Amino acid sequence: MASADAGDRSATARLISLVERGGAAAREVGRRTFSRGSAAYTIGITGSPGAGKSTLTDHLIAIVRQRDEPIGVLAIDPSSPFTGGAILGDRVRMQRHALDEGVFIRSMATRGHLGGLALATPEAVRVLAASGISLVLIETVGVGQVEVEVAGAADTSVVVVNPGWGDAIQANKAGLLEIADIFAINKADRPGAAETRRDLDNMLDMTTSMGEWRPPIVSTIASRGEGTDSLWAEVEKHRAYLERSGELAERHRRRLIDELHEVLIRRVERQVQQLEGGEVYQHLKHAVLSGETDPYSAADELLDKLGL
Image (cartoon, rainbow, N blue to C red):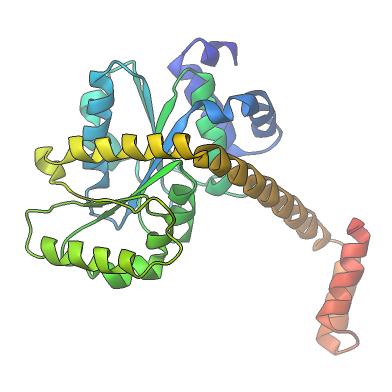
């Protein structure tokens, strides 16, 4: 921990590896870094594969580094439990920052963490905060349930869409409208960009639970670095709004409650899995299959064994 506190990137990487693997070591890292949880501001970047998220992220890193501020990037890939399939693509796109000591880039896969990326990601953010990184970009590889949950748990969530991919339908399906604080229409030089903006505006007009902040829609062409300064300006505006309104503290409070809830569920789930290997479970399973008892009664008996 001391080396990570001093900004040692190798030590920080080792701690994040412990977090990914889960177990007692991960819990110890979590306990030691918990007090640093609110020290880092997080920005989630999500959208469909090929939307240009990594290229956008590369430019946002450059904007932050121009101010000489350290920044961390967590590329979330739930699809690869061993290698983290996003590593190569992300690091190729962000290679100009590879030797910058002020930039920490890490791809994360589920691996062995109890609760998966939904719990491993905030713990990794705390590790980065403990190492002196107060700004963290969380990029996801797609718009599945895990990716949307992880990106939506950031302080500011940026949803990246492209012209002509049926944004209105896809955004509603994936729940992106609910998590978006900012929309970025990337590859905005392609046909259909104006229609995409119109569709997003229409969806926002029909949203009744939006509150005071209406997600702005920013046009970008990440391959040429166009619009990225405007996108970062909107991120800063959203942060200022959250801080001014008190919503930032409220979001942190809600996330901690959700994290506690998730930890409890996963702990009970693990105990249930252990029960499944025992004689009582086998007996009750056969009783359910033979019609001697029903699943609810069997579950009640098993939960009694756990004292629940």
